[in-house]
Image 1 (tube, rainbow, N blue to C red):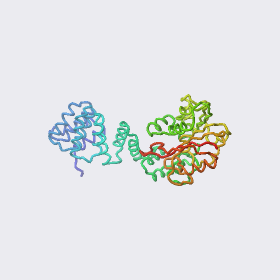
Image 2 (image 1 turned 90 degrees about the horizontal axis):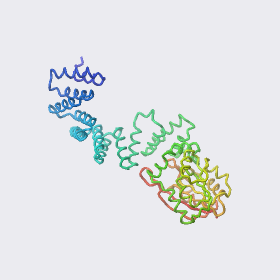
Image 3 (image 1 turned 45 degrees about the vertical axis):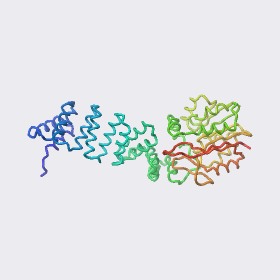
Image 4 (image 1 turned 135 degrees about the horizontal axis):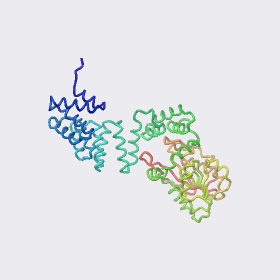
Length: 430
């Protein structure tokens, strides 16, 4: 026969929400055993829940006078003190709990939360990291640490801890797009590929899943990103595109274009300028001084809506860029593509269309992410962006009758806390 434990019976009532019955049970225990530590403590926790915090704290402190060797009871005290905003004493209670049991990730997280509210950000970070080292799958500490790092401007580290939190089970109801991105950010490409493969099996026509499966596996790599993929990607990103790309990732494509043009072209507002893949119009203000007419082309209506707010463009066209250029003949003096070629793999056809669309002596300015391998072609990186070797770019420009005027190696953006190498090119129709 199982031994009857009155404390466990009272706790069961408390956990079931039968607080009045639980209180009665605790008081019955204390009526015969006034120094019962657990009855004093748990009755105190219960009374706090029912609103009598003063008596609750008296009971809990009286229990510690009898026996102060319980980390769990110090944690309970810390939680109550946190709830009533007595943060300094809450921190002391959590520290007492950790003195007794330093391997409790939950208590470290609780301490971090209190220290963060006390504006002891280094102390809070140390506490969250202690929790992470004990249990790297403990979601509350991961999310709190991510929030703290974001608060202190450390976006890359924040993203990694957010991703670590997101990949924790259960996974069934989580977005496969965010899940795949999280695995990618964490460098777990095999898991990212498995995620995209399962998504594609469930939705065989999903352009996003197909593109990123190819990016993670280097298998079935398309010659360029599909229109459906680009529209989905950029329409979703349009609202926060500039904040993320420029502020958080340090994107400097427009500055590279500006330097290339300033070195070789006088801004006299006398050129017909095409901003190819204009996005939200990050290049608009720097191109305007050169332009008699400035037109932006993009596949994403969401991006074009943001570009229109710049009030710099004379025309904005929603169309796939290669298709648009194929219908242009000697129409432009300057064509710019900043951060556009990262969505094209094979560039021969696109460069031929650019050559057709430019007038004699016309200029072509663009940025490219640098491929470290495969000098004769391109590669699709795990990020989902295409990279090109400078030898490949130079060969294509020569084949299409361009003269290379200027080249600049540069860091285009930050990715996973590391610089993304690329280069800018200014070429002229010979």
